[in-house]
Length: 229
Ligand SMILES: O=C(CO)[C@H](O)[C@H](O)COP(=O)(O)O
Ligand SMILES: [Co+2]
Image 1 (cartoon, rainbow, N blue to C red):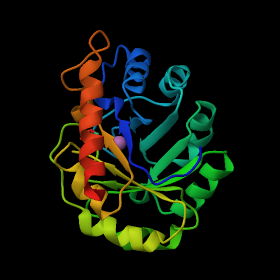
Image 2 (cartoon, rainbow, N blue to C red):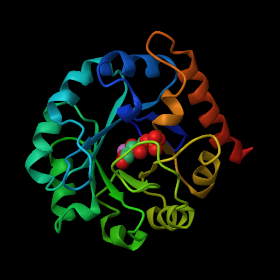
Image 3 (tube, rainbow, N blue to C red):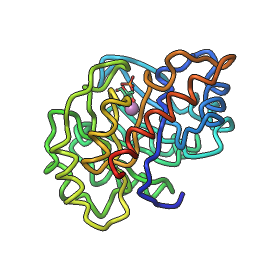
């Protein structure tokens, strides 16, 4: 995985057909997705349950690019090796998930993955100030985690603060929740480069009719890249 600051669109399979993840991942990649975002929820850290490492391992052979795993679980540490075995490229833990995020990030890198830290909307940028040399990605939640299809919460001031904090380090800023062609330019302008989108990518399409996925991805990318022209 090489670092670059171009806009990357990461469809969240939370909005895909749960009975057909492999084909859905292949379809969005064929339609221009850069990364695949995989939402792991435990019914404890967030009020919803999705799936765990076994499902990630089953999906992996259907992804040619980056598998970006967003853990909404607590605790995190007992499961890090299982997600490494499952083939995660990026493993992101929430800063709110426990008292020892520093140890967690060390363990993620130690297991050979890129380390991400996520912040809930109510958590300030300062919560991750001491972690800048330990992370490859900071995920700014623009919804309260747990469900797809929620309304975007404006976190642009936090994104700008994180961009300043990161400086010239090779650290991605990922935005997760309510990203669509209207909100994408706001976050791109503030300094984000990885845009997660679930409902805004998968709406209107299917594995049998994947062209809408491509149109949705192109529209989000064009809106985000438009802030630089
Ligand atoms: O982490 C998440 C929710 O906790 C999802 O990645 C996120 O909500 C994406 O879905 P949408 O684009 O529909 O908001
Ligand atoms: Co997510």
